[in-house]
Length: 282
Image 1 (cartoon, rainbow, N blue to C red):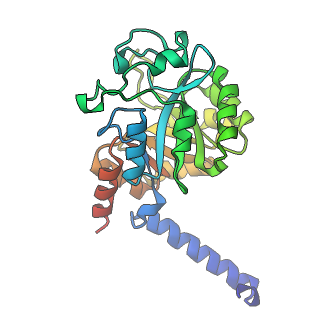
Image 2 (image 1 turned 45 degrees about the horizontal axis):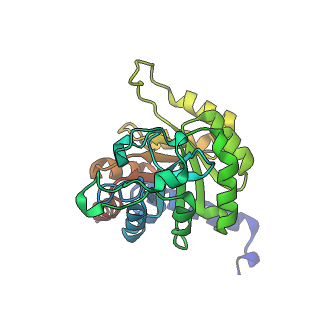
Image 3 (image 1 turned 30 degrees about the vertical axis):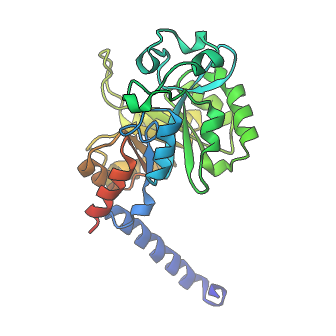
């Protein structure tokens, strides 16, 4: 249909539509433009990084679930945030010193409440299998590049579409290797521009973007801050990168970030946050 119009007119139409789309996003008019990612599943309401929280994330209409992985003593990929099981299961032992069978014997739900007693640490296979059509799983590597071969086996065997799987992590070298191993997947580097708890100086956005470009990732996943306005997002875009932010349970901050144009917001309360963002558009 459009082929009968002059090239100059077509260019003007495309430019106008693109500007309108950007304007809508920047003014908070297009909620669908912002992905809502459930942090360790719907972890405010269910025990983090369990099938209960992941399934609840899907039920609360999260666009994606986020989880954390470690490699076990026997080379399996298990879903857990900490390097030690003490906080979530009560067993004071590093994950890497336990087999999957030993980890699966532990109760990963009772720490959240008695109603969750008996929840198990999931395997990555189980988590990936739960992804509904049209949703995404953000897989955060908490260990190092040693997990990549096992991760590749799991993802290849899953049969999931490349657009349903995202690799994220703090380790810049691990993310560099992940992108080389999974060139067909989105890979985001997690970073914070706040001063470290150990007294280290804060990173500048220029430094973050320089590292992200050097390691070849598709985007950055940054600790959310009120200063992330439209100009901030524009700077990330001009570097050819996507921008996700974590972990936002404040409705006012989430609305500000959405209006600024971030690609996605990670939250412990996906269902509630979506409702709050929808209300802010009225």
